[in-house]
Structure formats: structure tokens, C-alpha cells
Length: 436
Ligand code: DLL
Image (cartoon, rainbow, N blue to C red; front, side):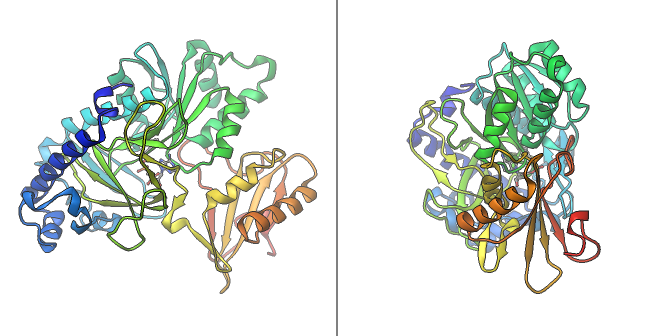
């Protein structure tokens, strides 16, 4: 553990810390007199002492559209010259979101990302191969600061140039790999394709894969391809970036949320109330210690459940399940609700299929239809039939399944995989769907 005092703190002591920090946060928000101060006074909280953890559900929530309404810097709570840097997300299908960080925020970010690396077994003697993109995206620099805070050696490779990545991994002998899960698959396939010329990656022990949803089935594929323990790391720019929550090497069972900095709730849809622990809800975070752009009860749109109780690694932090999807990604197919991740699980249970797929949501007619495009070198018609049946039996949905030749579907060497394609009108997004 990078910070055992914080990560393994007794839950009572942590609650006391959270309580104090919540009051401090509300104080900062009221003093900043921005949109969240208006929401607080609107909810009857005009003094920081009025806020308490017991009454958390009475405090206002914040949404992405609140951030857009105050774009770019309306939620910044310090003088502009106190901002050390700005990151953000390009907002696939939406508008960009910008997040300002003070020096203090950057220090916290380094610490929580160092904790994530610690979850993967990294130590100051580790070498971290960081293939998350460097730039406005938080993945690259966040894990970079984490590696530096840990005292490890960071290789700032960023995304792309796969052949060079493999060579560096072998030559340097890095023990920790950081990248998206889809890129981990890509690297693993490139390694397998290199055959006898493949570099020796036996030094690689664990990977921290995140920034996009992925399933336990994909974990298995990555572990087989790269010979690493594959761990999930979660985060979002608005809250800080990577380092919000991470799975541990010991249990690989739920992501430990750094809740001394990011108070976690799972909320009922369209309601300020939490769901019971263990049930899926909308992940919502309060940034207890942030100063640049602190957020109260920020609704992430990501769906997961929270679990309390001891973990074999010794951390006492609340754990979140893997993210099953984003609220707005949920598909309703003939009345059945399903997240793309459930489809991924069924697909990857069949070892004959490659871990690449595209889900096309055909919204041209009154009835939403969906097609699943995947790849296999063998018995394509038979596999398509079996997969259609497996999806019907396990998820109760009907998809038009197309099994294509290997290497036909898109790959993402840089950035996040876009597995779901919306088809509203115009030509088919993939030739195989022409005439559908
Ligand atoms: O993706 C931060 C990050 C970088 C996390 C590197 C982990 C590793 P954004 O670009 O703002 O920040 O995107 C945040 O990505 O709301 C989720 O929908 C999704 N996401 C991030 N991590 C995971 C994950 C970074 N482990 C959005 N599982 C979030 C599922 C994830 N979804």
C-alpha cells in the first residue's frame, strides 16, 4: 500500500475525516459563490456547519449539464491564477468539459494514482510503461504523476506506435503496464503475431486498464495474451482523472474507492437518494479535498454498485463493482434493458471469437434493432447461430449477429474504443449491414 494510514484506516476514523472534509468543502463552495453555492442556499444550506454526512441526500447534486452551463470555468472555486493546469474530456458525442487543478489538487492526484499503482503491486523499484495518451486527457499525465509520487521509473510512451511499444517493453523490462483494455488486447495480439521475433515480456507483472468499460471475460483474454494480472482502474476528469478507484492484486474483486478524497454514493435514477449497498445505481462523487474545481455530489452517469466490508488486501475503502455501463448507453430492445457490457460477456465466453466487436443500434424505424458484428477465422455461420441463441437465452434479447473475417473491424491504437455505433439514418455504418 502506498498510504496504509489512509487506505487501511478504521472506517469510523475515516467517517470522522469525511465529515470534517465535507464541511470544509461546503465552506469553499459557499465562499466561491458560484452555481453550487446557489444550489446549496436553494437547498437551505447557507452555512457550512449545516452540512453533514447523515443528511447527505439533502444536499444538491451536480450534473454534466451544470458543468456545460457554466463552461468553461464557472465551477472553478479559486482565483484563475491559482490554477496550475487544466485537463478535460473531449466528450464523445457531447461538448468538451474542462477541469482546473491547483497545485494541491495535483499533489492529491499523484497520491491517489500512486495508490492505484500500489494496488497493482508496484513499488519504488518498479518501471511503469504508461501507454495512456498524454495531453488534455487525464490518463497519461495522471498515471505519470502517480508513478513519480510512488518513486517508480515512468516510461511516458503515450498511445500508438505499437511495434515500438512492444520493443520498449521488452528492452526496458517494465513490470507495470498502463493503458486502455482495448489497447492491451491490441498489444497482446501484436505480440502473438510477432511469433519468434516477439520481445520477451516476462518482466511484466500487472496492468492497470481503464478509461472504458470492460468485462471479466475481456480480463481473461488480456491475461492470456500478455501474461499479466489485469486490474481495473476507474476515474473521470471531472472528479480528478484516473485514481478514483482501483482493483487490488490480492482480490481482483471490486475497485477500492479513495473515499477519503472522493465520497462515493450510488443513487437511484433521477433521485437524490442512494440505492442499498450491493445494488446498481448511478455513481456519484463528492470531491472532499479538491480546491480548483470541487464538486458536490457529481452524478457521473456510470452505473455500478458499492460494497463495504473487509478485503483480503487489508484496505478498508468501500469497493465499487466494475462499471456495467453508462446510464445513456443502456439499450432497450423490445422492452428488455441491457448494457453493452452484458453482450460483451456473452460474446467473449466463446473462445472462437476475437475480442473485437461493434454493436450497431439501428434507430431508423419505430422499433429499435441491434446488430452485433464480431470476428472469427472459422465456422462463421455456425458461430453466428450459436451466439444468437446464447444471447437469447442469457439476456433475453435478439441481435442480428454477423461473424466476419479477422481484422475487419476497427481497432483503437489511440484513445478510447467506441464499440457502440448509433445508426439514425443514412448509409449502413458497415458494408455487411447494407440492405438491412
Ligand atoms: O477516462 C480517466 C481515466 C483514465 C480512468 C485512465 C482510468 C484510466 P474521462 O476521459 O473523463 O476520464 O472519462 C471518464 O470514462 O465516466 C466512465 O464512463 C469511463 N471510464 C473510466 N474508467 C472506466 C472503467 C478517464 N474502469 C469516463 N470502467 C467515466 C468503465 C470507465 N468505464
